[in-house]
Amino acid sequence: MEPLKNIFKTMFGRWEGDPDNQDYYVKIFFAFISGVVCALGGEAYAGVRGLWLGLLVYVLSLFVIVYLLEIDPEEIGGRQKLITKTLPSYLLLWVLLWSLLYGFVASPGLIENQALRILAGIFT
Image (cartoon, rainbow, N blue to C red; front, top):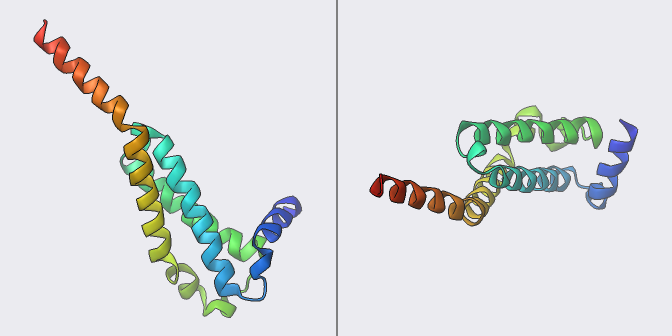
C-alpha cells in the first residue's frame, strides 16, 4: 500500500492543503481513465459493461481519496458530500470522453462491418 500512497500523494500533493480540490482532481483523473478504457474497449463496453466500469472506477476513486490520500470525509463535509459533491463533474467528463473517443475509435469498424453484411446479403 505504501508505494500506491506515495504515487497518489506525489500526483495530488499539490492540493494537500485543500481537500476539496484533491477530491475534485482525483475524481477527474479517474473519470479520464474510465472514459478512455470504455472507449478503447469498443463494442465490449458499449452497453451495461461500460456503465458498470464507470461506477466501479468512481467507487475506486472514493477509496483512493479516503485510504490512500488519507483525507478525512469530515473535512469535505461528510461521507454524503464525499460521494455526491463531484459526482456530476465525474459523470459528465466520463460520458463525454467515452462518447467522443468511442465515436473516433469504434465507428469505422462498425460501419465497415455493416457494409460487409449488406454486401454479403446482396450477393447471396
